[in-house]
Image 1 (cartoon, rainbow, N blue to C red):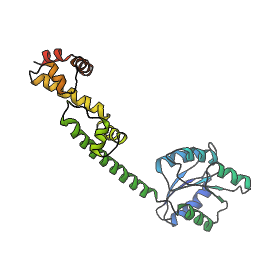
Image 2 (image 1 turned 180 degrees about the horizontal axis):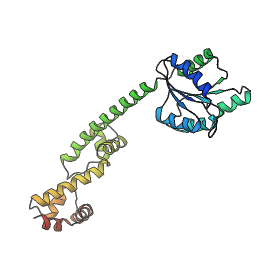
Image 3 (image 1 turned 90 degrees about the vertical axis):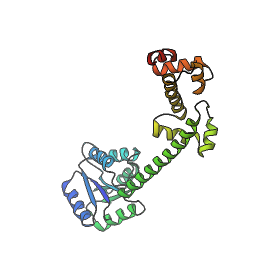
Image 4 (image 1 turned 60 degrees about the vertical axis):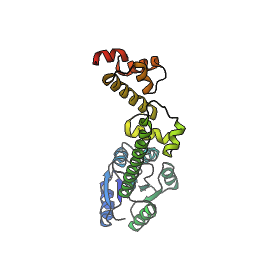
Length: 250
């Protein structure tokens, strides 16, 4: 149990201190909550490995808190063990129906506490390890996004006059449209074709400012077969028609 994160949700100070003293001797990292609502908040913020939850507390009972925790995607994988002085079968059943994985009776038998914690933590990686794994997965995903983005961007910018189909881009980059758009969303905040349109508008702006090409030729160079459509798109983006833009910046 060493270095395991245990959240104790218990309104009775004596019981809280008993559990705390025992778990600290076994190297557990502890946090405390005095009622169910505080327990829910600390479970979300701290992400413990396991929760020891009193079933009956003021303001918000353990049963209500357990339902919230087990239905929240952020906390639903955290096992909850109820601790209670009520030993009747109906109380145990009520606790299990609320989402608890186990039940420990008061007064505590600490051999039982140790055994039940060990059982439910046996196949669960520590919270800190889960965080590292999550960070590693995020970094790997971001790296994949960057590779796909830069590879696709190179193909798109090679010739702005040509609009490659999504099938062509999938073949060129070895991925699918969902991943292509996810990569562009992550790296540029747009979809693939929104990005291409923006790059075309930027290139058109440069050509209008720095060359004497006819507007129709500019539209063809940035992938518009029809100069009227180009003028409409340019005005939507920059607030001026290509002709007015060139007059202002000549």
